[in-house]
Image 1 (cartoon, rainbow, N blue to C red):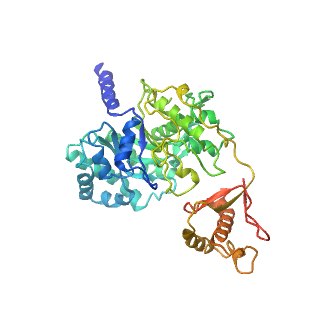
Image 2 (cartoon, helix red, strand yellow):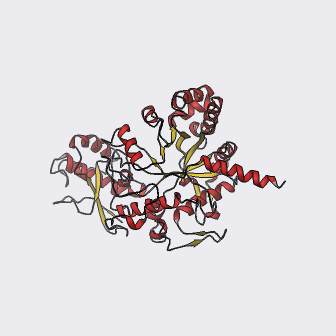
Image 3 (tube, rainbow, N blue to C red):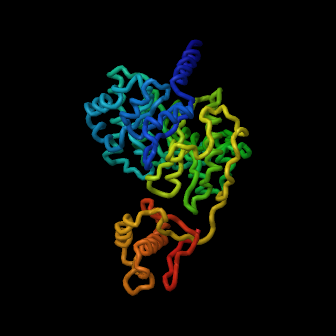
Length: 462
């Protein structure tokens, strides 16, 4: 019997050896005029990227990665899940088309089935959701049938699936998935010795509550600690709290040895006026400290899971200007769209923080208070405005009423003027319901009142 602990320890060491402690990046391509895949891989090699996560299984990129020592995570698109989950031959075909032509010369280590299929807005009885675990099983079976044993199959979760996060020991999954999907998913992960991938963004947790959560705590400053009253565990940073909230939630479903990986994390370098703390100083500080933590020679893990390697993929390699949503969505990159650094970064973790050049000071770490308007962004092509204007004005009879001939905001008769009014009017009316001043990248927030003459633009107060 004395051999059992030693055997378990040896198996754990083998398992750890399969995990890379080198920092990974998300190689997204939703941007204009980005460097080519060949150029991008040369850039990633030059900055010593250890792992790459793709949102697909792009054959050109996988071919270019052949012979490198970069570990790769590929993704089965959400649109393929139903088909793969309902037919094992489709799983076999997917593996034959997307993995076998590249493996083992390209070091594929993870196949992620779907991206954030499991989230707070999911329909647990939906066809795709019900097909997720069968699709994961199908992919794993096909890999095994072809002798591919060191590629783990998983999926990515959003943090919003955790219903209660603080303190971590109180954490649970949302009841609808806790009773149905999660036990099946975790049983698969546990049985195949895989890991659960989670998007972990301390930025969003902090920016939603900057008064009560310390920025120092969110940026790994190390000057503040929080003790979990339920577990007694001491936390020095927000990321560890968020990771352990997932682990505690998993344990409540009866699974005690499931490992986590971070599918996306990072900090935005810019954002809308009402997006507090999105700046280069914070982004560089967060990612530098994250790298130092995750590349420690002795793996640090988290307070709940000490000493474990946590595979981590920073979001993202490039700024991606074609992403929709708030302004922060387009500013997660460590590199500009032309491949030049947004700020200095050493992905190996060897460079001391004191060796970096000074960063531009943060000027928006305190939430903006005052009025905001929404207007057409100055870089927008006017040809793209008529369709957006028509769409906004079709929402109801009030949003664009002031733009009718003879009304206060009809003149000047300009598509830019009319679109700016419509955007601001719509945003002011529906912001409380989640509307943002973006309109597919056509608009921006402003603190300057665009009103003129008798025309008063609706505003929001933050």
